[in-house]
Image (cartoon, rainbow, N blue to C red; front, side, top):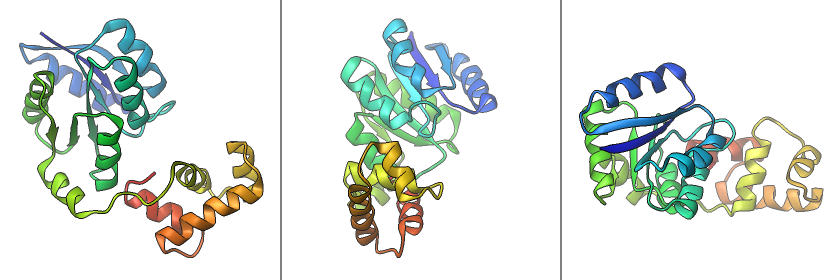
Length: 201
């Protein structure tokens, strides 16, 4: 029996996936989570074979949770299942230690088969997205530039961002300026939008 942890913040989607996966004779959903911060503690307690993680979760993103699981519970194989089929997300997921990346509009039979494959040691990636990722350059942003842009997404001022990131305003201005230059945009709002669209945030 393959034990599966499922993290998805939309209750209807989470419940539907759990029901459908539990219909498979060799799969058992052992945890259903809505908050990313619960993923690692729950996985350490229940020791699932596979973790199915959405990217955008409250508390902790699926990508950050994947990296934490790779460090703390490497026996748990991570599959990212997302609405957002962006090459940047795929590249970040693989760098974080995920071994699967699927978009949600695929058939549930495909998801069940992907779980079996990753549990047996394979890597499973949506083929169309894999092709896009190979043609797309990796994110040019440093982790700090990415943090600054993410903090700027809601229209925050430089002072606000500096406070959130515990950095000086001049340092934040430098990060934002570099990010604007790298994205070829005119201001921090455009740069954040551009980065989000490419899956860099």
